[in-house]
Length: 185
Figure 1 (cartoon, helix red, strand yellow):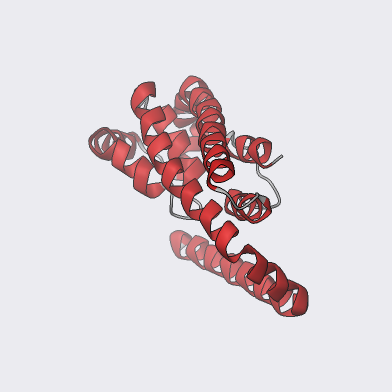
Figure 2 (cartoon, helix red, strand yellow; figure 1 turned 45 degrees about the vertical axis):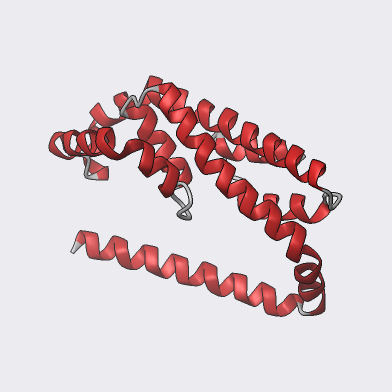
């Protein structure tokens, strides 16, 4: 089930829980032996590559039209900015994908940008494979090593975790609203 959810998320469909959480859960629930971890790791890498490829191909096919549409101005996407973005992404694209996909909130937008700016597919797929290999290894391992402790901790103080998640959500909304107001002003 975790493979399917990661595939769906990487395809650009927003889910109620992040891929990081799915990987932690899968790592926690797996039998704690090396073959099971390696099989899950390889399966997750494949799920990420296939899902990201869906989003990449849709973005490559239809994304340029969005940049040329009148709504692009609302996104502050001027022709000059698009040219600068293309030059920068052509130079740093693979590294932007490998490193940037580890920054929360950038995994899907970078995939869309790679498609719109027509980064060569083999280079895109290799960059995603390298990035996802690191990402999946880290979160599967964290789930396998600390999963029991985290589960016990959450069960012992669910209200604390619910309040922490609510606080994080409030802070994110406030930051987004502040950034939007500053852009207008």
